[in-house]
Amino acid sequence: MGTLAYETKDNVALLTIQSPPANALSTSLLKDLNEHLDKIENDTNVKAVILKGEGKFFSAGADIKEFTSLQDASDYQSLSERGQRLFDRVENFSIPVIAAIHGAALGGGLELAMSCHIRIVTENAKLGLPELTLGIIPGFAGTQRLPGYVGTAKAYEMILTGTPISGGEAHQFGLANHAVSEEELVEKSMKLATAIAAKSKPTINNVMHLIPYAKTARFADGVREEAEAFGKIFGSEDAKEGVQAFIEKRKPNFQDK
Image (cartoon, rainbow, N blue to C red; front, side):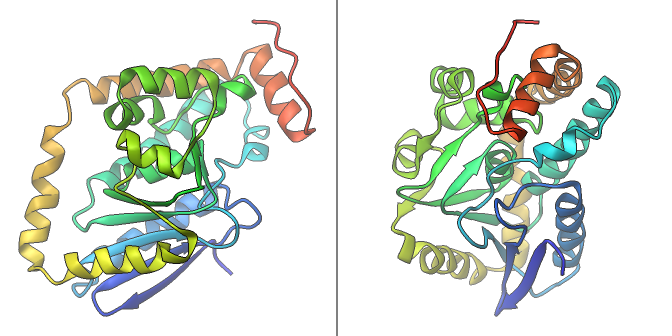
């Protein structure tokens, strides 16, 4: 079984992350997502996409255990760049992608959700970038996308403390379009997707092409520097300690090295 389930209903494609227990963003999941985007792009009937998670979470983050198999800074930088390219593809996709978020969207999970065009969250969901609690930093463009949604001050607070916000707060700060109950999540997402799919596909495609022009020119520079920093930071003693502490389910003992 793959890491993603795929089905279509009328003109809406439904992608469901199936990577229990945390729906972690493994390299195989990211590969599957890229291949499914190819499939959706080639389906002339699809006018909107819903991305959701099965089980308890949307996605609780990247697969940290996979990180331990990488060897040096260049490996980590390459991992970051691959994730950035994929999420950039999602953000610039010709068909709108709606993230239906429940449980948690943390780390890479939130970075994926932020690359989607619309986010519907449950009121009690947790959204955050907790990488600094592991001695590492966001690597899939989280430092660049989050300020655009919640503002610079709130982005500093969320990233530097690693403290997640609730779905209700995400809606308040502009990170989510709507905050709903757990029971309403799929219905609300499908209602929104259906409203979009009722429009002419050429008009949808043109809007999807035009809106990204509003992104600042410095975004590409920031994403590139994030990948470089992501690679360098993984060579530090604190990063090794933080990742090992996460795997061993204990509090890390950082030495600022």
